[in-house]
Every structure is written in structure tokens, then in C-alpha cells.
Image (cartoon, rainbow, N blue to C red):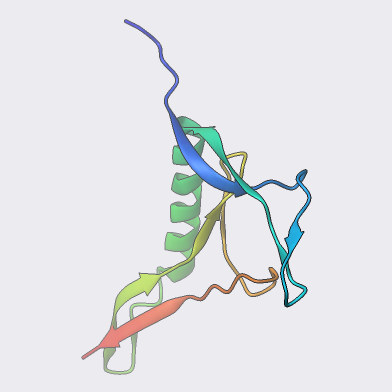
Length: 102
């Protein structure tokens, strides 16, 4: 059986490339695609899923409202790591959205 490594292309910021400015003076980051091993990404997503499950396991309802959905914004690093997007990163806004229903 052939042992092939599966990869997926991900768009990442090219930290080595010089950013271009625009009329507002903001720097526009250079981006590039990078191939990431799908097994590495699978492990990172699995780890994050387990951690989020542990964090949210006791949040099933608030008063008479039941939790129906949780939305998380995540970022994939050039190395295949996965992390939640918070407001600390410049130019990137992320949020956790809790949707409740009766």
C-alpha cells in the first residue's frame, strides 16, 4: 500500500515579505499559500475541539433558555496549529457567539 502524505493549501501571512502601505497609511500584509499536512491539522482541530467541549460542558442553559449553538472563529497557523481568534490581534476581530432559544 502506498503511503502518501496528504496536504491542504492554507493562506497565511508571509512575515518575511515587506508589507505594502496604502493611502490611509495602513500596512497591507503580504499573503501566500502554504501546504499543511492534513494529519497535523486534524490533530490540532481535535485538540481544540476537546478543549472547547470541556470548557462548555456545563453551559447548557441560562434560565429558561437552552443553548442551541456556539460559533467560534479560529485561525490556522502556517505550522498547522489552530487557535481561537481574539480581539488582541491587530485588524482581526473574533467573537464567541452563543445562540439561545426557548
